Image (cartoon, rainbow over all chains, first blue to last red):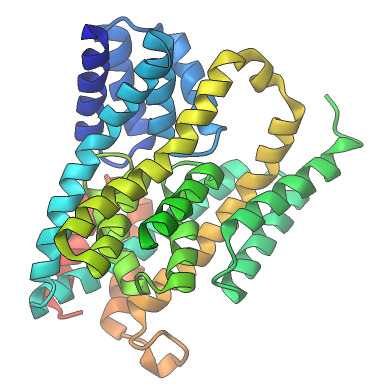
Length: 180
Length: 190
């Protein structure tokens, strides 16, 4: 039980003190999980992280589940995951409730008018960063353009179909030639 | 029942979003378009809040959407329930998948099917996020959904160009650009 509470608290701290997930979170996970708690080695954490990135879902959640499972089985996985998610639940509920009251003020609307411009820019930059890593050949270019076109033209098409179609095309195209 | 639908939508999002926080945006965009739970402006606000508060972005946005949908149907209690249900829905596939993968880690890393699938899914996700970027540009710098050039908001367009230039010159945490843009919005009445 002590370890379970410890898992929850450790991942609560990780969830509460990282902004934006991704690599910012990795360094905090390494400090807490490897240096402080000695639950895993540096290499193991990098392994978990690599798997977390190539399994679906939120990367931080996947890593938390992994560390929790290795430490205390399924129950450990649940406690670690609950810990990493809990700060978000509290913080977002407070902010969302506050914003609902403040949104009636013109000045707040103007502030968010500016912020939405920044969001557009941040997403464009994310697309560029992701594209550089993800787009490796002509097939990738085609898949990116096709997914873009479909979701612009048919906004309510579920991304589930696009993801499945891409996976199918990838497997068919790579089956013949590119065996390593 | 609205909460069942909310759970199911986020379960699908957790199961099929690959590539970290921003990969959930295309799913949220489709939810807004299909169910009318929120418009493009509110989605933009939610992304901004999700990026500038602690915690994983995907989780933050699930909580926010759950809060909004729950509040619209059942007030404050609904908001609390909705935020929990959406978050649990998003996280549950992760937990299930990792519990399976953790047992057969080595086999998973070598698996050709997995490798080929992710090789193809990543560019598709990039394309979908690009379409979300187009949507955000439309709602951010055009005044009425952005069909006509005449509806271009000049002040917002200038801010957009400046931010695009400086974010690629100086790498700061996104939260700084969000704060600067918020201040600009207040000063120049965007």
